Image (cartoon, rainbow, N blue to C red; front, top):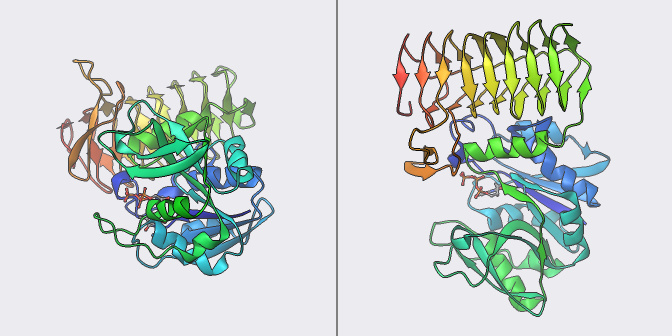
Length: 393
Ligand code: TTP
């Protein structure tokens, strides 16, 4: 089945991490987010991947190349990011038969995508406790009868999981009206398809939409949990590596270090001496976790350094971030309420009791900086020695 992967979006809710990187290219365990989306499609038997690119397209093109795991890849450019239906419209000239559409920023189980492919025209759905912030499906006699966006009175708890198989003629009905929020939405194409064809709801076992920074942490938690232990790097005799830890070739673990898996140390990462890495932690290529540093349940992207005497918990550090000596991160509120973040100007609950900070590429903290839970540092932001950062900057 031809599979369209939508990877053109600007990822504005993920800022500052998407300041100069496409969201699908953010790291999730051992590959970019979109690599996991594509893996699910390939494992399910996709015959061709049609990748819609736009924002920061070059990295996406480079990652896939002409072939991905033996499956041919075609790129198509969406010039302006005017919505998901508009993105599929960019792929339309390449379509020739039934086709699947997956969001390039969603994680799926391969078996679920296989079930979707086998079902013919279908929509992936996930059962959620509170469907009011999703597209919600109505179903009758094993087919989808309606889809409503963010209903206050949801007809079911089946949420649209952004995975579809369309019949061939759906490619002709991509010219939908602009929605209230000014986009051309794929759900409007789905609504038309439901009227014209029998569309099966396929319930997915596990699914994650990665839209906001803490969801990138959740994506890493999911994929790091799937790691099998493999230690190929240089590990000092006095270091302790516990559980499912991957130390890639070219990574270094110095003396006195304890690493509790799941954890992944990519090539060029160095830890220690005397450091503690725990939770589900990704230490990207060329990262450094130095003496007296504890890193818990965090993602350090390429070249991020936390070299001396720091605590970093439940946080995401962009590329080449540097935390000065003694920088500490708060990741828990004393009232035990979920940590909040500002996303596009609105305060939003992360629904996590523990969440630390998000630092954009090249942010640098001075010595003894204290960063409060839920704070975002813009790309290139700096702090002054001894500063306590309570608000985004
Ligand atoms: P969204 O998550 O709705 O959009 P986004 O990724 O741009 O993020 P944000 O809302 O934070 O700005 O998009 C769902 C999927 O569709 C995602 O994989 C990106 C993709 N997409 C496009 O390819 N083109 C588009 O015009 C839009 C809006 C999204």
